[in-house]
Structure formats: structure tokens, C-alpha cells
Amino acid sequence: MTRPSVSVVMPFAGAESDGAAAVALLLALAVSAEDELILADNSGTVAPADGVKVVRAAAERSPAHARNTGAALARGEWILFLDADCVPSSTLLDDYFTSPVTSDVGALAGEVVPAAGPSTLAARYASERSFLGQAAHLTHPYLPRAVAANLMVRRTAFEQLGGFLEGVRAAEDTDFSWRLQHAGWRLELRAQARVHHTYRVTLRELRRQWRGYAAGRAWLARRYDGFTPQPAVRRGLGRGLRRLSGRSGGDSGRSLRPRSSDRRAPVGRLDRGRYLALDALLAAEELRGFALSNRPVDAARTQGTAGTAGTAPGSAGTAPGSVRVVLVADRFPARGDPLAEFAHALRGARIEAAARPETVALELARSLDIAYREDDGAAARAGAMARLALRHPFRCLLDVRRRARSSGGGPPAVSLAALAPVALRIGRDPAARLHALGGEPVRDVAVRLAALTGRSLEGKHE
Image (cartoon, rainbow, N blue to C red; front, side):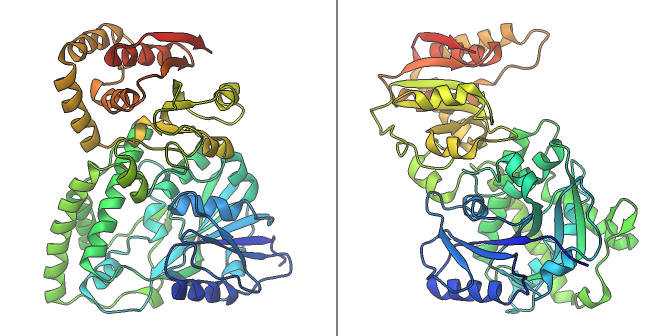
């Protein structure tokens, strides 16, 4: 059968020697004349290569930014996102289309299976737990999700959503999967389109990765009403019960057990005990990660409680001390929102937004200086709350009373802890005016921020 054209996009961040290996992985794929191979270099170490478009993705150190930068060059009907630590078969593109794809399917999730590699404890543990297995992710109790390590996306669906959300370091693929379904597209498994993934080989890497995963899940909980991250202990108990009963996950009644060729070797008693110890260790790392910000590591180190959509604060023409106006917004900047253009036209403006929208105006977001309330983790909120209470105890008491009055009968008002990091960020711009950019809910938040920061609220834009 004739398959549609595919643009393969591989995000990459690593050493120059690893970049050459990533290019080799792309060139090993069997492609047609209509296909294209794109490597989005997130580290600036990859040399140009024949047969592969190498594009620099330097504005932000994150997989989301690299994928979006590569996808901006894509001309195929479908975009295959493929991670550089995955080894695909040469027939991967054809494997995705061995059966017809209906018009309502926005993305196809190819399977990710463990690769043979260094036999360290961390690698064996990750392989046994199969963290990236798509089958389990597609049975997620909130909504099906897919990892972007091996994900085929219809280009029209990708462009409709505005791509992956930038300014985050983890869970951007889960968020993309959920926004895709909210927009009316379906997510479908293609188990035959498999890649082999190399897991972390040291405990230090595994622990850092686990903290990042947890920070991403906590961020998702702040974005999506009704989603609560399941603690590791509960997941472990569920996994144990499934193994004891011999059951596996399912999707629409179909068995998603691995093929016999993918079954891992039996776990010895010694390793089984070590894995239980690692379960406990990573459960502790997860609790720590739940309190952290989900901003990219570089941004978190340089900006503290600040954060942006794609670039560091100040890079969009608002250097420290030059901010003239702080705009308070809700989900921003949504595609087609005239308020986004208004914000872009203001010189010296910075935006404090509640969250990123479902369909983001990506290029506009990159050009604006935006901090998102959803990015502030529990640790940042607790620390900011303590500092704000010490500096302005009476303002904080008045805000608690104001919030209690405004919450009567309606949806719960934003907590003081959630506003505390915002108030501290506004405090760094002493000459900036405060404006509400939206309707009454946004104005209510702006009124409280004005009181907390000792400023008047100027104007109202709806």
C-alpha cells in the first residue's frame, strides 16, 4: 500500500560524537522521495550532514522546543517524533501504516521497548519496569497518553494545537496527548511500529529523571482539573496485584501484552530485592519531585521563581528594571486572541498568566515575556508565601479575608500560596503599572495582586 509522506523530527541535546550517532540513526531509516529527515540540535554540537536537515534550536534547552523547531520545517502529511536514545528498525515509517488510519486519528503511538545495553542495576530496573511502554500509557485512568519518544502526529493536528508547550522540562508529551483529544482527535496504538530505547545506566541519572517525571506530573495536576498524580506506592501495589493475577493493561478490549520476542528474562531473587529497594528510593525522589518546578533546568537555575514561554525573562525586550507594565492574564496567549496582539504591541510589558492555553500561538508566545502561575511548584509557593507573610503580614491577612468573601457559592478563588510567587515577581518591577487582561475572574486576581504589592490597578482590557 502507498503510505503518506512523513517528516521525521529528532530532538537532540548531547556531545558532538553523540550527534553523529543520532544522524546515523536517521539515515538508517528507509524513506521515500517525499519523506524528510530533520534533526533539531538543542545543544549546538551537531555538524551538517548530507540527507539530514540540521536545524539549531537554541532558544530553550528542552525537548519541546527542539521538537517544535524541527516541526516548523516539516512538509510531510505526518510528523514522526523520534528520540535520539531510541534505535528504530529501518522499516519504522512503513510499519506505522500497515493498516489504514481513519481521518479522526490525530496521532499514532509507536511502541517503545527496552534495548540491550549495559547491564547496570539502574538499566535493568528501568527495563524491567518499562517506563516508556506505550501500552500502559494508553490505559491511563485520566485520559490516554503517549510518550513522544516514538510518536507519529498528523501535521494538521499538530499545527492546530500549536505544537508542544514550551517552557517545561517534562510531561509535555502527556499534555500534548490530552490537548489533542480535547480538540477532538483520537490517539491510537501502533504496536508493530517499535523502537528500542536505552534507559539510564546510573542511579544518579535515574533519580534525577524520576524527580523530573514527578515535577511534570505535579505540573499536569495544576493544569488539569480532576487529575491527581498517583503516588509511587499505589502504582507499585497495583503493578504487583496485576502481576499476581497475570493481567496486563488493555485498550478497547484488546490485549496489550508484549510479544513473546519482547518478554524480558526472569528476574532473580537478588535483583527482585534490589528492585524493591529502588522502588522505595524512587518513591522518596518522587515526593521531592512533586514539590519542584517543571521549568527547564537552565531556566529554573537562572530565574528562581520566574519563568517564560520560550525565552528567559528580559530576552524579549524587558530587561530587569525596564518593565513598564505587568499584564495579568488567564490562559495566554491563545491562538486568535486579540489580547495577545495587544500585549505584543506594548513596549516594556511583562505578562503574569495563570496557564498556557489549549491551542497556543507559539511564535507570539516566544516573543513575549511570560511567567506562568502553573509553573510554580509547591516548594516555590511555600517559600514565597513565607517571605510575603514576613514582609507584608497585614496584606496577607486582608487577602485571606478577601478570598473568603469572593468564594461564596462560586468556584474556589485562587489561593494566596499560588499568588505569592506572582506578587514577589511583580515586586521586582517597582516602576511597573498593573493591568488586568481579561474578564472578571482575571480582574479579581489582579485586584488581589495590586493589594498584595501595594499598587493600584490601572485600566481594564477585555
